[in-house]
Length: 237
Ligand SMILES: O=C1O[C@H](COP(=O)(O)O)[C@@H](O)[C@H](O)[C@H]1O
Image: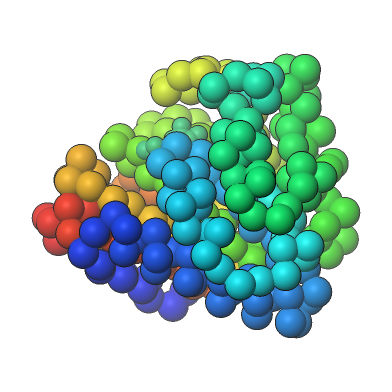
């Protein structure tokens, strides 16, 4: 793994700008070489970052395919649905359609939804080996979780499936699906974009103290890891 690139900027607006410039570069590079750009989205604060920044970038939007790093198994009309959040706030701001999102089937149990999502994802990737995303956009909760991989949870050591179900998420809603570490760490680029003092302690525990927390286990084996931090988030480094 190459060493993580830690990009320190002043404000949340600067985090959004750096993040979206980086996404633009990576997207256009992938489109030039592969004619498609495969990006994994997280929920939470990332949604607002992307809604503010993506309308400003220049790219061929028709080539983008949106996957979910994790998703809550709730109807897309629910305020807890990550797809629902992007549909409500991003569609209409950039020229993309719902069909470019690889969505979960929320009518299924988490177990079946995870299996179904693997089936939906598979045709976008080479038939042998692990899926290799161009970019995974990752969040980090104040407890150090990323995707729906929570501290101390048995899914941290899951290596047998690309996507795992979780029905006891400590953060509501309890029923979710999540990428597992073998897939996360097979991505070409993993990007954390973090703003605010509220995450400063966790950023320090991961990046400085090297504590074994879920977000700290993101270490792409043959890819690049980025942490984009504003002054607040980087204040304990
Ligand atoms: O529950 C979740 O939380 C994380 C972190 O969210 P944030 O609001 O603290 O940024 C998010 O990355 C994940 O996708 C989501 O399901």
